[in-house]
Amino acid sequence: MNPIEFGEKTRHDHYLMDQDVTYANHGSYGPCPRFVYEELQRIRFEQEKNPDRWFRLTKYTLYADCVRAAANRLDCDFEQIALVDNATVGINAILKSPLPSFTSKPGGTVLCINLAYGSVLFTIEEMVKHRNMKMRKIDIQLPVKSKHDFIQQFEDELKKGDVENIRLAVIDHITSSTAILLPINELTDLLHEHGIPVVVDGAHGPGQVFPQLSLKTLTCDFYIGTFHKWMYAARGCSFLFVRDTIIANQLQPSNTSWGYRPSLSQLAIMTHFHLQFFHQGTRDESAFLTLPKAIEFADSMAGGFDRIYQYNSTLSQQAKTLLEQRWNTQEKDLVPSDMHAPYLKMIQLPDLVDYKRNDDDAVRLINDLIEHHKLVSIILCVNNELYVRIATQIYNHIEDYIVLADAIDKLKK
Ligand SMILES: Cc1ncc(COP(=O)(O)O)c(C=O)c1O
Image (cartoon, rainbow, N blue to C red; front, top):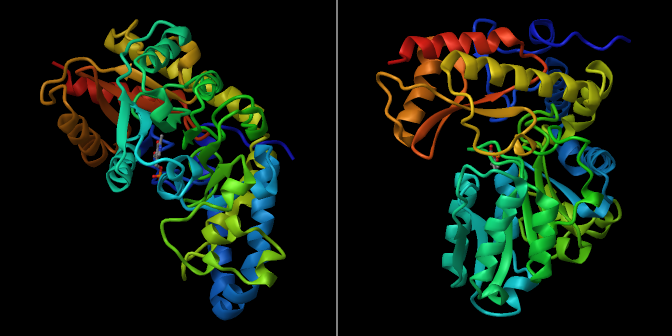
C-alpha cells in the first residue's frame, strides 16, 4: 500500500476538522485521524452492547495488549509503563505519592523551571503546601545562545547550595509555552550527580522527537508522555513511565479505587501499578484502546515515523522562515536551532494595533483568531513580546501559514 499523500489531501481524506478552518495548532488537543476516531466509536459501540461483560471481563486483556504495544513502541518493559488519561494525571500521581524521596526525610524542595507548563507549576505549588516543602524554581533567562548556556543555568542554581534538600526535579522534554527541546539526558545526569531523582514532563515528546523516543536510552526516573498529541491516538490516551518497578508499585493515583487492592486474577495479567491507574471507577477507557490503531495509522498508512518526521520538520522550518520574512522578525529566536522543537516553532509577531504585549492580550488574540478568522494557533507572551507558536502535522501545508501571515497582517500597526 502506498502511504498517504501529506498536506491538504491528508486533511481532506483522513481528518475530521471543519474544512474552512486553518489549523496551525496541532499539539494542544490533537486532533486524531478519522481512522483512529472510527476505532474509538467502534470500541464504544462494543462496550455498549454489554457493559457488564465489558467492564468485568473484556477490557482487561485489551488493556494489557495496549500496555504491551506502548512498551514495545517506546522501548521499555511492560512493568514500567501504565496508561493514564493525560499528562496532568501522571504528574499529579508522581508528585502526590509517598515516594521514598519525600517520606525518608521531612521538608525539602522540588526543583522546577519557570518554563514548565502552567498547570504543572500549580500542581507543584499545591503539593509542596501539603507536604510542608518548598518550590525551588529556576528562572531560565531567554534568549540562550547554546545548549551549554542552558545547562549552565542549572549548574549555577545548584551551586547556590542546599542541594541535599532537593527531593525531586521536574523538567520538560519540550516546553509548551516556548517550544524548547531540552537536553534532558545532560540535565538528568547533572541532577543525578547530586542524587536528585528526575521527572520528565514529556507531554510533547513522543512522536515528535527524533529518532523515536526510547525510554531505555533515557536516564530520567519518571517520564510522562501523551499518545494523543503527536502519536495519533484519540484524546485521553497518555502514559506514565517509571524506571524502577518497585517505585512504580508504590505510586498512588490521585483517585483511589479498586486497583488499591486488586484481585489475584487481575494480578495474573498485569501489575499493581497498571491496575491502580486502570481502575479509576466507572469511566470510559476507550481512548486507551485506540493505541494499536494509532500505531497502525502512523506505521502503515502514513508510511512510518521517519517519513512523518521528514515532512513535519521540513514544513515547520519552511513555515518559520516564511513568517519571519513576512513580519521582518528574523533573528529573534529564543534558543539555538538545535533546541527548537521539531514540529513547534516560535515566531515573534510584529506590533499589533489592538493587542498589547501581555498574557491577557495573547489569550484574547488566540480567541479572536478562532472566532473571527477561522484560524487556530497559539499566541504567547515571552519576554514582553508576543509570539505565535506554530505547529506542523501531516495535514498541514505551507498555505496554512500564509493564511496566518495574512490574518496577522490585517492586525498590524
Ligand atoms: C509540557 C506540557 N505538560 C503538561 C501538559 C498537560 O497535558 P494534559 O492537558 O494532556 O494533561 C501539557 C499540555 O499541553 C504540556 O504541553
